[in-house]
Image (tube, rainbow, N blue to C red; front, side, top):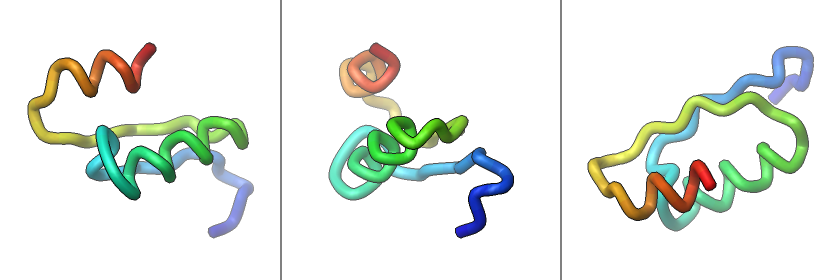
Length: 48
């Protein structure tokens, strides 16, 4: 993945591999668009 455009769309972002990828890319300064199934508690943790 080129890092010129630091925006990523991540599916399954509230658990497992999707969550791990979201966290790592966030640490690297990426802007993230996160997609997940309805899971209010997990979504709040992710936003937190």
